[in-house]
Amino acid sequence: MPVEAAVCGHRCACHAGPQPASSWGALPVGSAKPDWSEDPGRQHDWEEGPGGQPPEQLCLSVISRMGGAVSAGEDNDELIDNLKEAQYIRSELVEQAFRAIDRADYYLEEFKENAYKDLAWKHGNIHLSAPCIYSEVMEALDLQPGLSFLNLGSGTGYLSSMVGLILGPFGVNHGVELHSDVTEYAKQKLDFFIRTSDSFDKFDFCEPSFVTGNCLEISPDCSQYDRVYCGAGVQKEHEEYMKSLLKVGGILVMPLEEKLTKITRTGPSAWETKKILAVSFAPLIQPCQSESGKSRLVQLPPLAVRSLQDLARIAIRGTIKKVIHQEAVNKNGNGLKNTPRFKRRRVRRRRLETIVFLDKEVFASRISNPSDDNSSGDLEEERREEEATTPPDAKPEPPVNFLREKVLSLPLPDPLKYYLLYYREK
Image (cartoon, rainbow, N blue to C red):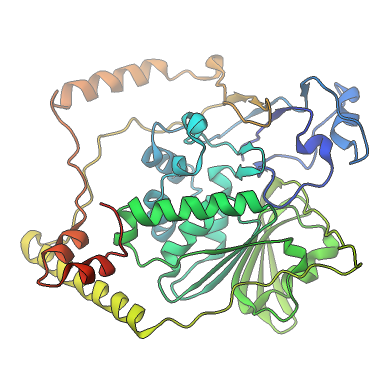
């Protein structure tokens, strides 16, 4: 499994003690903690508690060599190709969800150049885990349409939105985030996706609902869920609390004792546990009591019942999609085809030297070790083959939103058309 290393700044999780669920990256590691035998002076930097004074200069936490890393992609599709090649993405549903939502859309504009690297990213309170972590989580959750999902430490909403594409219109999709500014950021990104992405019309979407609060203070009278994910390290004393959020037959995925762990509730008091991979997550931050000495309970969104008008819109859109598919089958014999993509060079697993810089709490880049990559000649040969076989003027066809075109062509009043399209921009 890949090992990601960090050169960390004076306010990172290495020095700040317990961090909130959304505030630090999920970094796959080969061992629970760094080996300090060669530099014991760094151990204090790693283990310093919340009361310690952090250093002002950058300090080296880990530099490690790793094997079998997922290569960076030039775009979202190539990143997904690499995750499939490395067997992080193994099912069609998960692949479709990853391709439907561009990871770069959840980055701040000035950091988008790093969006397609298999790295965690953090800026202030905003955080995204590494793509390989999200793909392992999605596979482990075994998502199906109509299920209920609770995301603890929902962050930017990237994972919740991908989950919503699988749950469909009759699922439940809730997230709890500690920081109010990150909750607002997630809502903005969700609004942007709904208004502008053609993927919204290709899927039946279960829109996430986000609330602000500490996920360890969820009201005890809340409903249980079919699927639960926690995006921060869960201490052993909180394991039973996490299990209590799960329905019988449900699946809980969380970092427990530095292992990404899948727990299935097979009965009222029966559980099956499976360790997926070694990971490094910052621990859940402990609740703070209010001035009155009482905990501030987090109220999750109510399980709303859809209106008849909304149900009619879902049914009409579903019928139109069936008509479009049937028309395509009659015309092509095999249904709608995906937009052709250029042939990509074969993905190779390479040994990499990785340093992730954290300057002002911003992750930078992954650096490959040229001495470990002996495939440059093969890659050059493949490049020449591609140039020889690809016409100079070949360009991918622009995607067509067939649902939108069909709705706009219907003999209906414009307000009704726009309602069927959720008032979305083209």
